Length: 575
Image 1 (tube, helix red, strand yellow):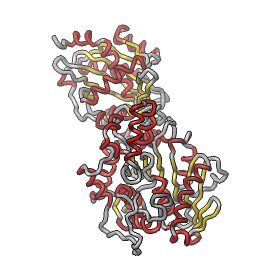
Image 2 (spheres, helix red, strand yellow):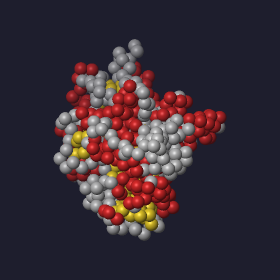
Image 3 (cartoon, one colour):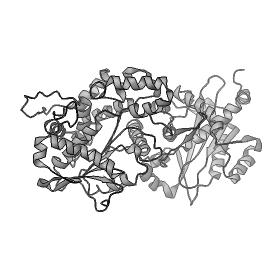
Image 4 (spheres, one colour):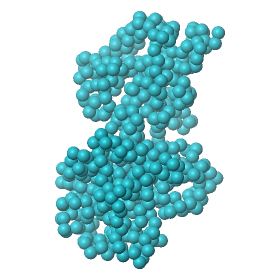
């Protein structure tokens, strides 16, 4: 944030009612004038779609958005050099973020669309100042009687540090200091009986909360999500509560940061595939799109929108040269300045990489032999089976999947996983099973169905070595013992096949018939890298993100890769 308001300026800043920083920011991103990450670009594209779509259930209120922007610029002051005591002047990206958070309203109830703002941004980009200003707005100007605003961290010292930034802002602003009472561990706004406090998991005041606004700082360092749950649950009686998360990336894996990051990815992917929809969360992730971009200075802005303003170009350039000269510094540099997560799982494919809308008709292609793969479950996960086949005259690998789920779990899974399992059942991608556990004989019957219906015979079948022995026995009885090939689920076994399969998916050399469940599984898949650089698939901490379709496909591909020449000979390829 810079101060562009002269000392002689006495009039309050006012924005016209036709001012829309969301559209202005989007247009500059589209034109290339402003460089952002793919995720940020996609979020603002979706916001503009909502604003311009007359059928959308939400609308944009310039009055609501301008009220917050004007509050920040008129009443909030910098507390630190070089602008200490000067009015805050918001940059366009900050105005757009505020407008999207506070200006998008529900047409029926005229309340905010956004209940949670997630801002992931490189360090030294002014997030503390912005968060402090928004917390004060929620305390003073949001029209909420008895507002409870909290600055949240796992330790009280850290919570007081975040809260303290707001206190410093109040002390620098005569207008706020006149209206607010600063006490030990509390800021009071007596006019509406509202208060703003620091809060931590080691506090004695977690019971009886009725939070209206929450500012969660640096959740990358949080080891569990209990504190997050307590705060969010306490907002249930408020009409339009707002939880604000502002953080950089970090190295604590498989906890709240990874959960929220994965949720953001699902929401953004859902703009395209509709598999995960949550309009109440605004996911703003400033990051590099890949680690190679760290060597392109133009890409540095993707994670640092304040670069050259609040964040010195020299600072980041010096850190870059240190990291290049001494690679041991590179992981921390990538993590803190560019939000590239380190020391844990990471997404295997982007939506663009996983998405392939090509389809095929197996009856027209008439494959002679296929290679199967299956991934088992008992109650919670999906059970998945697939066949993969190639043709003599092209290099595409075609995959056909089938999925199974317990009928008794359908409604529960729809509610918890937030994906349209019922629609997938209607369209024939998913079959329901009666009883308390999935009957794995359904897999045998599906392979027999493929063989009978399409005259396509199983050449080999890959499966997890720990699969149910009675299923393996049934498969051997029906298709021959030599057909079943165990695939150990170790990184050293899966790494090269997974890398090759990923490359083929990216180049669209894998046609999975645009199966929406398979696509969802591909996008859910994360990779974990061992000390030798080998990778293997994982679903990560979010157990609701199924990867069973990828697991079945990978088992099939491992067998294909290890028996490529024999399979090519069987189908007459390259003869």
